[in-house]
Image (cartoon, rainbow over all chains, first blue to last red; front, side, top):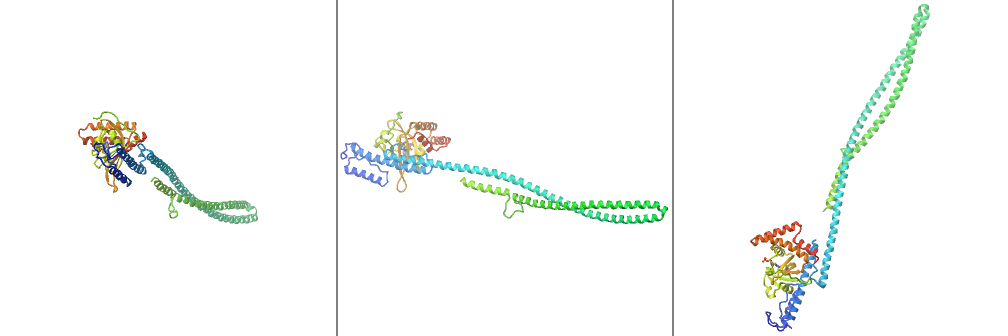
Length: 309
Length: 174
Ligand SMILES: Cc1cc2nc3c(=O)[nH]c(=O)nc-3n(C[C@H](O)[C@H](O)[C@H](O)COP(=O)(O)O)c2cc1C
């Protein structure tokens, strides 16, 4: 009974006033203002109990509202350690508190998984970066080596072409020397034929001179023999010269083929050298192998730093 | 004044107080009055330091007021002194109360029964802070020293006070 207080410091108030106090506080709470509490409305046990009951309801609701909002805000900000403490909450309040706590627990697990995925991505980026670094270093080294091999080969090919050309000149000279020899031999042959004729005439004249011409006849016969031998030697020389000329012709053909092959090889080697270091012979906008490796590295770096963000 | 007697309250209960913007009590629930051995008339209108225990370090209250001034919540382990000399430990949640225009109209605290293990850990840290404060003869330098020590203790663990409190709380599963 509220109507009559039994003394003490609480003012006596009629039931209507007490109920109006409770109603005002409840109306404020219903409107979202949890700052009001029911003041003392009477001395009697029932009045105190009613007041405590309303205030307890407001206290637990007030606490629940303050905590739930902050707990969710904390989870949204990634402060997952800040849970909703279920202690002091009962019944439906407790269930809701547990649900919020579990949700932020799950958000924490999700965040952890996302973090793990991010870590895995970073690790992948690291691995990719170091793999590309290794490969591009190897490509760069290989390119340098190939470049210098190609340059060596090009030098070698140029020298070979030079030597072959020198050989051609030598063989051509040999050919014209053979022609001169042939002309000389022809001359010798003509002289030998003339000499043989002269020796024949001399023999006839010596026979006509009889005993007095005997000695001369011997000389004429010797001269004839000499002329015949000279002719024979000339034939031999001619045969040799023919062989040499034939061989020289073959040599020229072979040398020309070799030169052509080496020129072709030289062209291929230049192609390799250009592909490797993008030299002046390379097509417009065509990068060398080393530059390509560098470009690849740059692209991968860009990709990797994007992946790390 | 402290008698060394420890008082506890039920796990289902919360201790609630409200203050104005200066920390003067405007409301105290039944549990608060019982545990603090106070009547409503003795509590309302008094500063909240009414139940201040001498073993509470100043640095923790600085943290409390700094948080409230920044309009942030704070969880803290606090030991309070009842009027009869008994003491009781709480895990306090302190928040500003805003009106519909977002202005701070007062402060609110609800407190839960803490776990023993968490109390022991808090007590250890607070003991060191208090020992540091006692080495100073004026309040200002005592607070500065205890504040610096609290920061360095937390830094050693790479924690904020909030993380420290929640580590104790989550470990003892309140
Ligand atoms: C909402 C609220 C609740 C508080 N609760 C307590 C408390 O439970 N115990 C306490 O000693 N101080 C509490 N305080 C802090 C006091 O206002 C005060 O700062 C503290 O007791 C230190 O007092 P002192 O500066 O006189 O040493 C609370 C302050 C506010 C705003």
